Length: 367
Image 1 (cartoon, rainbow, N blue to C red):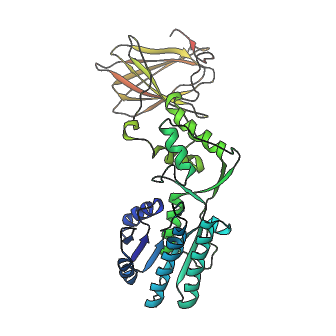
Image 2 (cartoon, rainbow, N blue to C red):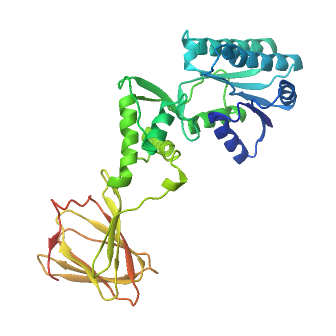
Image 3 (cartoon, helix red, strand yellow):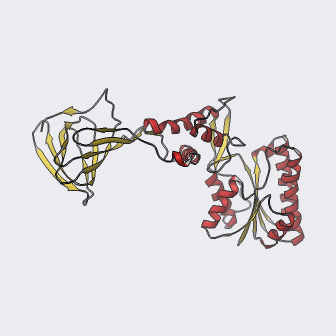
């Protein structure tokens, strides 16, 4: 199969081309650098056309007719002349329902491909896309998500005229997945076409969420980035970091025993830290009422000691980086950890709460 992608240098085009290459699907590309004759030759050998090429903020509004309508007409006329029952995906816009010049140009493009479908039986798939967000979208152009992500990540100001303006958004990976399902003939042309899931968020909520991503590098508190729109917004935000921003420092605390640093904190699942201990040094010597921890020795050798604070019962666990054994602390049991090796010990630590020095559930208890 040969898939022709128009507007392949655009935001959606770049993401789609990458995925097609991953699937070993042969791609043909058409950009504004190609000639009309080259486009006709590409259509002649293509099995499917994904028509993404369009303008939405031209300097001259005549370009709406030249590109959005004219280029679509050229594609349809060429396909009609070849009598090819080819699959065509048209990336339209929800603005096709509106009466502005851009929306009207997209509506007319829809009519052209629908007529082609009637005339020669092409399989036509028209997607009226709302706002699409994700990596490689051009900021300060036509995507408020891209603009907010770029400006906030670069410490630049943003402007919000109507904080309660609701946006309808779809994520680039979901758009690409949908298009590929059509390309691979997994989509029924009779089914109502839409990109799912579609998200709704107002400008104030959007800006606040992206600002929290930016803040997390300083607070170490991660947003809930595991699923849904927050996950996709976070991935989008990260894509606008410059290479110099790919890393950031965290505070650490040194004493005669070794080093301690908090790595990441969560809103409802505690925090991750690590500490080191020099040979013979002991850390801990306390108990918790509700706080629990999980320790993993990743370098060196360790001995954990436990004592029940009421019964006095004791227990010891010896572990090392060669065992990769999780050691868990239990409320009501005092515990400490000693480096029993000859080299520095490094331990990864998870606690089920964020450490609050003003309200610690950590009570000193001599072993």
